[in-house]
Length: 297
Image (cartoon, rainbow, N blue to C red; front, side):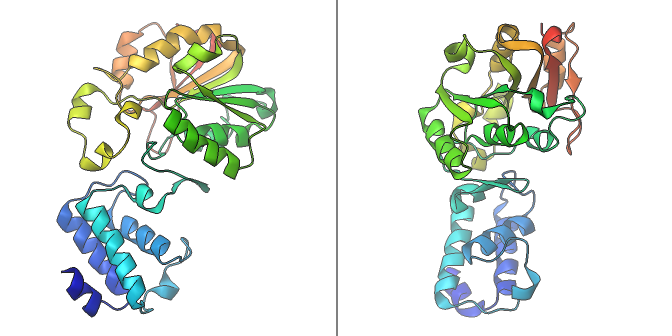
């Protein structure tokens, strides 16, 4: 099929149609930046051919060189045969307008907290310059720590992770944004390495996939570090530790913002007296909670 495609497909339009057909035929799972075969194909082909990501129409009927055909088909087959997430193929992921380097040492960034940071946690925070210290637990690629530093320019930010591999990726991203003076990388199991610190803001997108969901993950998710996904039987193992220890590290008036996936019902059942505020994102108000320091259990 590949040799026939190399000979018969000529234009970018041809290869886009072929890609969408292959992706749908293979039953790929989309959840690492796009949610359908068309968007994924457009992104992969634009990236492979070094085309602008915001402009497609002028190039649709342009013919590909033989070398470009080989490159595009290799990317398509890697996505189909290995079920490799697109971000690992291109070595980049996007949160809004912000690009981050990623590879198999970290999960692909896809946090709802990113859009909340773009708005500087409005209306829950009146003065962004009042945040002078912040921590991102389970930082992974460092994306949320970086967005926190950009949103709150007077804040010193600790980016914490248990994985030394993840911290190496975060170090690269922090350097790409020139934020080495503002963000400190910390190798630690949650708060264990920062017990003497106090923060105005705690954010986290921790591992929160429950055991039943872990057992049913699509192949694409199995390419990611499992320690960055698995959250125990009900998905709340790490969240419980955070809630137990955060009171000792959060300054008076401080905020804690945590993403927990689809575990709202389980969390509210576990903490019936805790007044969680559920923040609105483009996916609804089921995924991210906010607590003020005096509301912590």
